[in-house]
Image 1 (tube, rainbow, N blue to C red):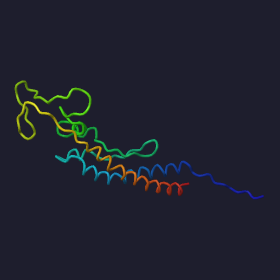
Image 2: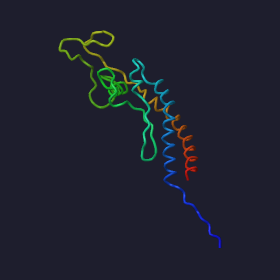
Image 3: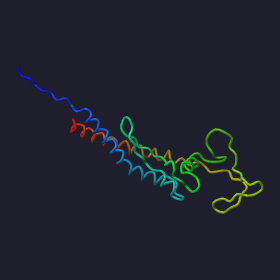
Image 4: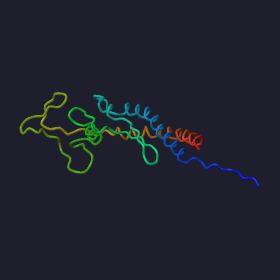
Length: 163
């Protein structure tokens, strides 16, 4: 009678290897995505480009890559998140979303407001929305998917070695 010993695979070691490779894959995908963000984001001052950054984080099923603005990042007297909202949704009469659309008026009763260029006006129509976040997502998605496919192959090899 021949007795054969079968060794059970090291499941926690395999899952740990897959998880580590997923995080490494998302870190590798950040550089090409950062280039896309720099090309598509508005670059009047460059502050929004610096604030918009691809960030990788661990999730329950592996890792994720998100393009977002830091919570405390400032753009002059306002936060970078507010600037992102104003540029993507528009302001004044040109704003997207529910509610009444109206001109932006001066806060002074009979005075004029000074625009960034130095022009003095009583009211302005507002800023047109620019949908650069949609363009970034459309261009970055295939890049991240390609990196994930390559990372899945690496993770499988790492799991084989761990198991």
